[in-house]
Amino acid sequence: MTDSPTAPEENDAQTPAVAQQPHPWAALAPDRFRLLRLAPLPTDRDTGTRPLRFVELAQVERHTPEQSLLRLFIRIPGQVLSKQQNLLEVWADHRAKELRFGPDSGLHVEPINRGLGRFLLAQGAAWAQRRWAHYLVEGGALPVKDITGEDVRLRRDHCLLSQGFDVVHAEPQKPKATYSAARVSALRSDWNIEKVQIIELQEAAAMLEQADRNLLEQENRIRDTHERLSKLRREDGTLRFTIACLIVFSLFQAGLLIWIATR
Image (cartoon, rainbow, N blue to C red):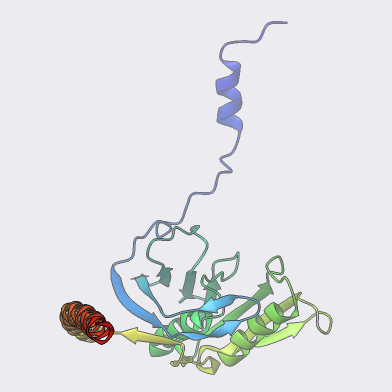
């Protein structure tokens, strides 16, 4: 049996479209940027050294009568991350009067153990509380694939609890858990400012000016040190020549005295 050339077209016409269209806000690019200072912290046995670092906070928000979105990004200079890393989304459903945190894959922050997770959640909570403090908060399951040990689980739970979320474990001391909160007003908009600091534009300019002055002062000190070293080398050469002349003269005098004494 041969197939009719129109059969595929008829089948395609009868097949319903199942591909889900991406959300119109899915590819929004950030339009606001701020500088974050990650304070130097003692070396951690799990995460290693934690030196002073500067990262960029980028954000974008949109509003319609039905919903609102805040999307926060953490960008690390010279480092390329996946689209699901260093990303926090806050969706407000105005019809259901409910707030949802995303993405669905969970909040994955790099560098870890630097206070950035709490900072992002605090920024999202502050944004929502300014407008919809009475909204409900949609809870959800916490991903467990990234929980590699008890310390990681404790850090995750501490981060959520510190920001006003409730964490319920299916079994004690097990990574599988759910998070929830009663209302937006129950969330906390503060974070550990000793770990993460927002650097405003004027502060950043002042830091650059101070760094430039420090570099200039160091260059002047290095130049003065080189000049002193050069002067000391010249004086050392003169002293060595003088000492050599005195030694030769002393040997000549000793030889002369010995010759006179033996005559």
